Length: 196
Length: 196
DNA sequence: CGAAGGTTTGAACAGGTTCAACAGGCGTGG
DNA sequence: CCACGCCTGTTGAACCTGTTCAAACCTTCG
Image (cartoon, rainbow over all chains, first blue to last red; front, side, top):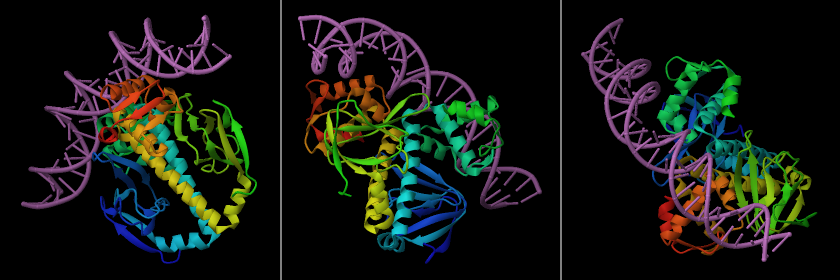
């Protein structure tokens, strides 16, 4: 998998790959952050997820990307030709097994997301989102790389609802805000009980 | 994969396996229908999907089932020991690749479900559900094996909303009902435009 | 045949959306 | 380096979709 890898830079809001394009490469986020999203026939956008350094994208598709990938901020990616990976998966049992494990993990994450969109109220969704960011960044002080629109489209809500709930959390001292994107989570337990 | 397979029968509402149980077997639906579901900490139930003859369940988990599987009606399943499959996946490149393809397909389905729960209105969700049933049964005359509660928990709605929308579709002649579970889809195009 | 559970329907309610106006921060250019 | 302008985010109020609560109606299964 390391063979043939090369680095690539993308600027803020730049498209890494588009929905429907042939899946030629797999990418690993080195620095920065990426969002995956897709549009329904009415043009409504769903954000599938956010990807931080260490995360892999582009492998979940078989021939064609079912999401578009966009840089949330300037970022650096390692790029792997997909053909080589497929070939490896087809001949090397370890590669194929690794690919299965990867897809299986992605499926697990998607199922969690499904539970959030299917059964949680707005407050629970936002709390779950913040907890997820805390867990992934490994600290209580967050600099969110994504906008309110991105969060809303990820949680199946509107920007107004997300914004209101951020404000509500700040009033209840569960979080502190300094600017819209700098969030300190003061009380993880509090959020956990809100996330249900 | 065929080696070591055996058949098993389950009665209506019987549990095939439970959430959290070690994933010892993989099952293929031979006859009848199955639902996969899981519960959130508050006890709210999400139905992950419905499985009809030919469908495979239990393979998407690594060690422990993340869903429980229950028989919607009396049904017959082919059972494969999971250990053998894992072993095959670990040693046989074709088996591992097949498992990857299977998981990848499941992931694609889950992403579609995600779009429905994240971005569709109630009418669109019910229309999408009916269209999916038409596509899978291969005919316009459906006998739904699942209750309104199951449909509601699958679509992230309440039984009342589902029931009302079925009635609405009947009034608009898009479908005909004879009993709650016998649905004839009269106008697929109509539903498609409603599903957005 | 009768009881129990599932379904339909109605009416009131509420959470989240929509529409609208304002505030604030950030980047850009002077 | 500051000021301006735009874009993002916040807040408010009215509205609407879907929920909740409640009652009647099947229907199906023992």
